[in-house]
Image (cartoon, rainbow, N blue to C red; front, side, top):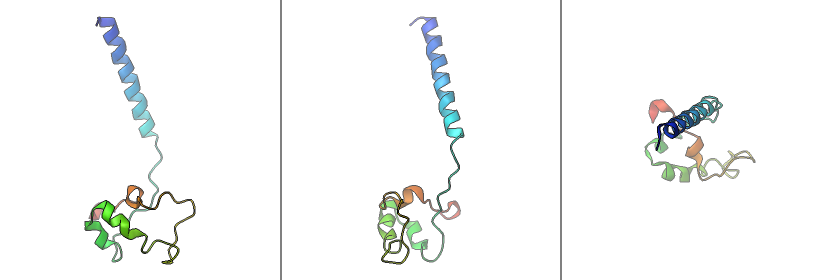
Length: 89
């Protein structure tokens, strides 16, 4: 590979990296509620995510009195969006 091609590839790489960095920098702030560290949720902090997510619908359902909004994403990946509070995870 000659020097001119290497320079072009390096410049293309830097432009792509800068574009990705700018895209990530401009992302909106996280607005999803975190999992509270209260008496009801504390037992799930020590469980693996997949196991804890299986427990969410026991309380967070129409039948249990805490229905999710109609436009809520898939119900089986709760902890993908709702993170545990940082100070207790």
